[in-house]
Length: 220
Image (tube, rainbow, N blue to C red; front, top):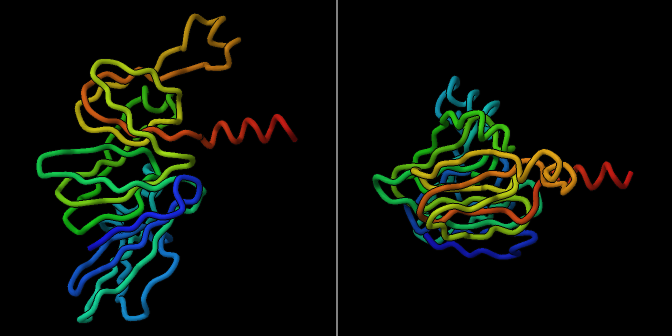
C-alpha cells in the first residue's frame, strides 16, 4: 500500500492506496472519504473489556474499523484526525516497541499490535496520563497530534515541556520535575517539565491542548 501525506503540518491528512487484498486498521472516526468498493468491517478494539480499558484509560475509540480491498484494482482511503495538526507515518520492526500518548493513534497495518500499559505517576504529572499506548509487531502505522510533529535525536538527556511528548521507543526513562527551584518554576510559567533519558528518536508536538485552554481562559 502507498501513503501520501498532505495538508501538513497544520491540517494533515493521508491518502492510502490499497492494492488488491490489502487491509488497513483505523480509529473509528478517522475516515474522511473512501472508494465505494472498499469493504469496511467495524469491531471492538481488542474485545469488550480491552476496548473499554483503551477507551477510558488510553483515550482511544471503543471500536476500530478494518478497510479491505477485495477488488482487482487499487482503491483509495483518506484518513485524518479530529483536531488540527500534523500526521506522521512510522514503522516498527519485530522485537521493537514504541509508546504513544493518549489519542495519537490513527491507523496501522494488520501486522502492528496495539496495547495499553501502565505509564506511572511521572507520566501523569507530566500531562501524558497514567496509561500509554504501546505499539509492537511489525509494519507501518500513522500517528497524529495537535500542532506540528518534530523528531528529536537523543543521546543522553532532553528536557521537554509537559503535554508535548507524543511518541518514544521502549527503553527511555522519563522523570517529571520542576523546571527550576520553586520560585523560578512559578515565575517563569514553565512549572513542571519532563526529563527524558535514553538513546534514539522521540517525537514531540509543537502545541498542546492545555496551552490552548490557558490562552482561551486568559483572553475570555
